Amino acid sequence: MARTGKTALVTGASVGLGAEFARLFAADGHDVVLVARRRDKLEALGGDLEKTHGVRAVALPEDLGDREAPVRISKELDERGIAPEFLVNNAGFGSNGAFAELELGRELEMVQVNVVALVHLTRLLLPGMLARGSGRILNLGSTAGFVPGPFMADYYASKAFVNSFSQALWYELRGSGVTVTVSCPGATATEFSQVAGNDKSPLFKAGAMGATAVATHAYRAMMRGKRMAIPGLRNKLLLQSLRVSPSSVSLGVAGGLNRTSDTKGIRSTKRVRGSRREPQRIQPRASSVSLRNGLASSRARTSSRTLVLFQLRGARSSSACSGQCGRRQKTSRRYDHGSMAKS
Image 1 (cartoon, rainbow, N blue to C red):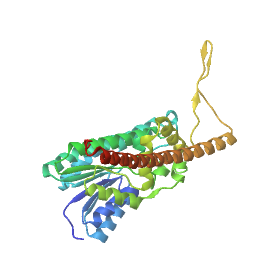
Image 2 (cartoon, helix red, strand yellow):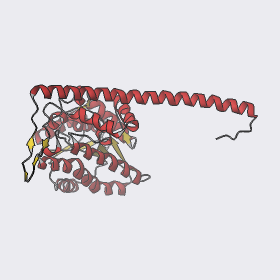
Image 3 (spheres, rainbow, N blue to C red):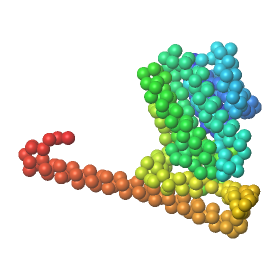
Image 4 (spheres, rainbow, N blue to C red):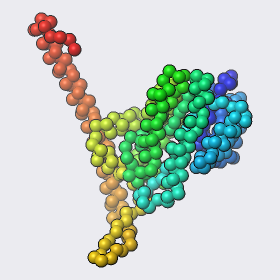
């Protein structure tokens, strides 16, 4: 395909969804700016895109965990005379475990990458799009952003921000020629689960969508200017179930799905009259750990099935009521000879 003269900036572009987005843009004739930490992977991907699709690929190795990285990226674009028509905020990572036991520096870095860098880059590039009257922004949210997530509390909260922020911007930008789309995938087969440490959790053991399918779904939604994109029937059913389930149930399901055999135990503080002891870790026996994880997985699967069945029963009840109410209304109209006011 011939080059369009438009450029897409993709963060987290070295592997996984980011690399898939870069391939989609290049296949449509768009030049790409690839941002990630690993220079070798960026240059290898860029060279492949240039050879295969004849587009221009620029590699910008940057660590978005550095607060100044978005500013450096913006300056580099200005110096090269590049005005991105598309921005894909894909970079992000997660962690797994009880929040009180996780490394504070890593958690703060997660907020920087998942939230602060996304907001910063969007704010730096958005004015140029508005001045041209055209542009597309795609933010990677998650189904995790619709419910609190025990044992991945920071990650779930960061995605809740992305989901909310993106939809608010979509509304603000109506009629401007610029749109913002948030993609909300569930478990996806990328490096994410290994980095987060939850690749052995019930959530990922239940199956994950392929990166190509998720990226293609999000890409098409962005190009159409849609507000939100949720790929896969299972993810759609999950979100519908969350809407009708008690928060205590959804919270328990999320915790059960995120917990792994490596999740650290909780800490308790024992008090003795007149003194205070240091917090002590509760170390369950190996057999107890196995049993507890088995029960958690079982409860999560059972709760998930219950949510879906509850939703389907509600849909059937609503459908039956609708049909019955329709028949009653039709009968009333027949015998009231048009005396009823139409709603």
